[in-house]
Length: 319
Image (cartoon, rainbow, N blue to C red; front, side):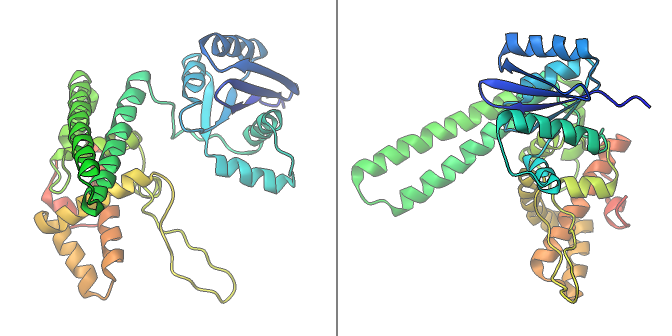
């Protein structure tokens, strides 16, 4: 049996370190348009079928998108998984070329994941706008907190000017997001469907669309896990700690928390579900998480079936 030809890429701001297996070839290219074009030609010439890169906050996007357009199977892997793989192999040394080799070995050893494709340029641009809006909201919260704590007139005036500017910039970004949705029929349809759910407003809908693009293509267990709303047990011996959620798409989980706070007031089905959990002895936070999980599963169902909100969905088990 012929071994699959794979490549591991370690991404930094200025350079792409590449290691190809089973040929055991190492290269490096500049992380710019010219270097990425050379990388694509090289990997295609070697017959590489699968490429693994560490997700490095966006520095890897241009290379990943270019290679995906060249019909290579590209997977962006969380750095924690690569670090864990290094531990499994008993390795301690770390450098960019060694990390590229480690990513290549990871590609050989681990099964390929098809669920998380590289987003298109337009989808990535919209995701960046959504992330920028969250940053502006966080900055506004910080400046408003400082406004309450400050007493110096000069500082107060500076804070008021900054808050006004941040509000204007947030409005501008929101207008750009709305315009981007209007230009894309598929995204506009998703937004329309999500907004039919009582409790989900424009901000939450935008977050779900931009930061959870897999919505509608996953089963209920996978979408809950990807949204960071699936409890994963950690038990050993006689220790029986409570199961906890965490990780994955934290921004999605945060947005859904606010949606749940609204839904348990204005969505009769979810309100009844929440009340039943609390009356049954579940702590308030546990009930909130359970409703958030139900909400993301319902949102996934609407996108998958291309059907608007139906109150009967909230009464039965999650689809």
